[in-house]
Length: 265
Image 1 (cartoon, rainbow, N blue to C red):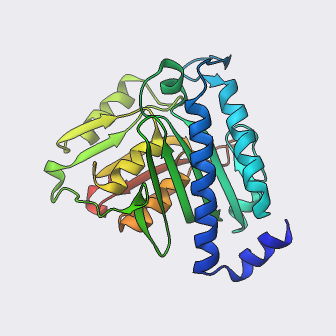
Image 2: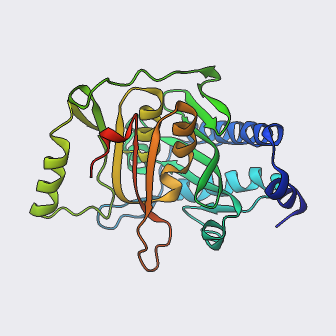
Image 3: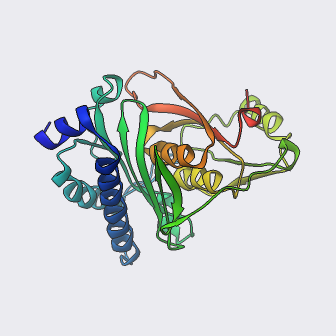
């Protein structure tokens, strides 16, 4: 770990956090605008319910190169990293270079770049840039929630009967009859259920008040890390549970909501 990271680790204050947030904003914007300008989609693998693009790999390389100047190590979906930093409570960047990869492949709106600074399992600052709609969400401990630099206050539903549930079916979803019946039973108390194909955007939409709960199982920390910071700024609540799956140390379940009463138990 570089000297810069050591200093931040021990003495990080709001001024330093703001500088890191601004760095994340600039890098996410640059990475998203770069992806927006690419017309060709190159499929590296297409197994089961998952797809991997060469653009994922190159986007992460681009982001990592930009973040290197901070001296803080990075963990990414494509190139991995030192996951021991998570359980050791250390500082690290965590990157999803394209969240909503299948949307990106098919030209479906709702694709983003997600960059978060974490300390162990705790969010510090986070940025999510939906380059298909030109919306950049930013937040963190001690900072307001912003969209394109303007402060936002969520206007969440007053009761679960009027609430919107955001969820998704990640590649590891249980599609058995029992699994689907359990999902339907849990979702029935909400006014509406929505899926957008991007975990990062789903939690962003809860943070800004377009929805009221985001709940999903068996996804990864890089999918939702930045969203944790957005929820912190919004004044919402999160329940993050590491699943302890061998070989998948950052596999988690997440619930992020306006209030705990909306959680699905």
